[in-house]
Length: 202
Image (cartoon, rainbow, N blue to C red; front, side, top):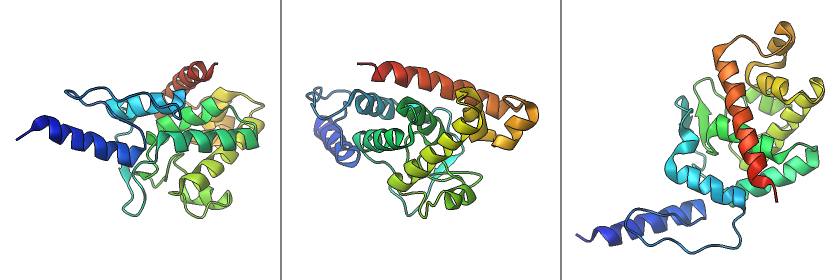
């Protein structure tokens, strides 16, 4: 049995699915691609290492939705919606990373769906008819976080907390609610936000 040829076949299949080359042990490194942005390249590396799924133990997949879309497509959706809604694209990437691990097929144990993990009622209120459709999901999620930023006077920390716990909880406590999940979520999203802002700097 030729292990290297099997590894090459696996790498080829992963590249077909994700739209980007991968590096598996024992195979030569893939050549650079001019069309892949720095974010898409970073996301592909995180997907390859499994890093993006480290805090997403309660997220499962929906049977009728695509498991992954190419990083360049996510980057494009984020960029278009960020510009349309005047939201920092790095913040959208940070939310997607922590909500779904960039998995358009993700479904949480409480029923949140897609890349930005929209609850069905929230999705419906935002005009999203299929939360597993990446374009609809990112458009709806961007509109939602924009509304939260406006509600909390541009305070990213409070808007992120509200994205997790709901705006009512943030207003009730006058800040990040004293829930361990929300406090960890805010810390993780802000850390990701800083990372993506740094990577997007020309």
